[in-house]
Amino acid sequence: MKNFRITRNTIAAALLGLTLTVSSCVDDLRQEPVTEVTGALLYKDFSNYKSLLAKLYGGLALGGQDSGDGNGDIAGIDGGFSIYTRLLYTMQVITTDEAVIGWNDGSLHEFHKMIWTPANEFSNAMYFRLYTEIAYCNEFIKNTTDEKLSQNGITGENLNEAKAMRAEAKFLRAQAYYHLLDMFGNVPFVDETTFGTVPKQISRPEIFAYVENQLKEAEAELKAPRTNEYGRLDKAAAWTLMARLYLNAKVYTGTERNADVIAYCDKVINAGYSLKNKVIQVPDPTNPNNTIAKDISYESLFLADNHVANPENIFSVVYDGQRTQTNGGTTYLVHAAIGGSMDPKDFGVNGGWGGLRTTKAFVQKFEPNDKRGRFYTAGQTLEIEDLGNFNDGYAFIKYKNLKSDGSAGSHENWVETDLPMYRLADVYLMYAEANLRGGGGSAATALGYVNALRARAGASTVSVLNLDFILDERSRELSWEMTRRTDLIRFGKFTSSSYLWPWKGNVKNGTSVPEYRNLFPIPTNDLVVNPNLTQNPGY
Picture 1 (tube, rainbow, N blue to C red):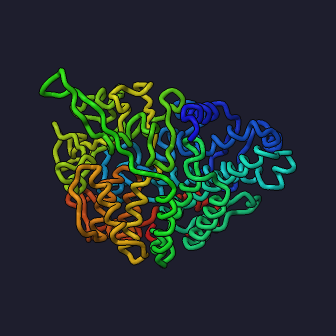
Picture 2: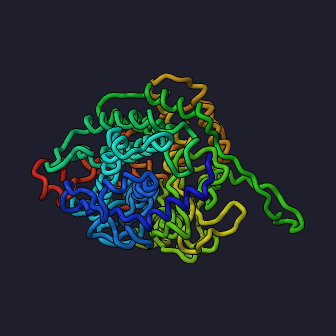
C-alpha cells in the first residue's frame, strides 16, 4: 500500500484548489457541472486527473468549495449540515435506537420522532447531495471514455491509471444510487448521456439492476485489493458494496440474493484483510513505576491514527485536521457526542456540542465486558424524558480525535479520524446473516466469524446463531457506522411494533409508525420542476 500521507495531502489540497464547481441540484436535476475552464482542456492534461478525481471523493467528505464548509454545494442549507456522511448518519442512525439528538435546528428533531415531511430540509439535502455527487461522477466518466482518452493522447501507464480512475468514479456514482435506492426508492435517473431532457423516474428494481451493473463494470477496472493509494477504492470495495446490495435485495426487488452475498463476502475475505488487533502499554494504576497491557483493538478503529497498520478497513473517507476542515464527518461525530460533564480533552478536541446520545434499548444490548459498549453515565440518565436535554440518555463513546498513544490529533477543533465506510467486520456479519437466510456457505465458518468479533471485543463467545442475534450483533459491532436503519428495515423492525425504542413514533416508550416511513419522501422542490416524478406513498 502506498504512503498514506501523500494520498491524504494530495486529495485534500485538490479540494481547496480545484476550479471545477457544480451547480446546485436543488432547482433542476438537469443542470450540469460548470467549469471556469473547459472540460476538454482539463482532460487533455493527465496531470489534472488526480485533482479532478479528488473532487469526487471530496463530495463524500466536505460540504462546499471552501475550507470550513464555505461556498456550499447545496443551496438553502449550511455547508456543514449538508455533508454526505453527516446527512447519511442523520437518516441512518438518528432515525433508530442507536442515537437521539438534542438540537432543534429546523426539522432535525423530526428524524428520531419519525415524523418527517416532504418539506424536511435535511432529507431534501441528502437527496440533492446524492445527485450532486452523481453529477460530479457523470462529468468525469463522460470525459474519460476510451474514445476521449484516445483523442486526448492518454497512453501507456497514464491510460491504465485513467481507466482505474474512471472505475472509481463509476463506483462512487453507483454508491450514490445505492443510497438513493435504499432511502428514496423510485427516483429520477441521470447518467453521463442525459442531456436536455427531463429525467425519468425509474423503479427500485431498475435502480438495483443499474447499481449491480455499474459495480460489475467498475470491478473489472478497479485496482486489486489493497494495491491502490489509501483513501481510494479497489476491487474489494466493489465486492463489499455488492454484498450489501444483495443482502437487501428482497427489500429492493422482492427476490432474495443470499447466495450472491456469500460469494462476494468470500471474495473480500480471501483478499488478505484481517481484523485489527492492537495492544498498548499504559501506566499501572496500582503502581506508577510499572506499565500494563491494554487491548484497544476495537477502539483503535475509530481513533485519529486509524489509517496506520489497519488491515481491516476496506474503504474510509479521509480526514485531516489541517486540510479537511469541516463541521461534518468525524468532527461532527466527536464534538456532537460530548456534553454534560464530559471533558472534551478526553476526546482530543476543544469543546463539545451537546447533541448526540443513545437510547436505553441500545445500551441494554451489551454485556458488561463488551468493549464496544462504552457509555458516559456521570450526570446522565438512562431514561430519556426530554429529547432536547443532553443529560437525558447516556452518551455513547465511539470516535475520538486521539491517537493510539493518547496524543491528540493535529488540530483541536477539526478531527482527523478517518470514517470507515466498509470494513471486514461488516463482511463477516453479512456472511453469517446470508448463511442463516439460506444462502449457502458454512454455518461453522459463520459462527467463527461472529465469535472472532466478539472475542476481540471481550464479549462471551456463542455456540449457535440466529437472525435476531445477528441483528443485535450488527448494532453492537457497527454502531454509528450508518447501517442501522437499513438493517432494521431488512428485519421488518424499523416501522413495526415488533421492536420499539424510546421516542420511536414520538412516544416516550415507542410505538409503531406507518410502513410508508421505510422510505423518505421525494423533495417537493423536485416534484415541482419535474412532471415525470410521483411522490412516495404516504407523503
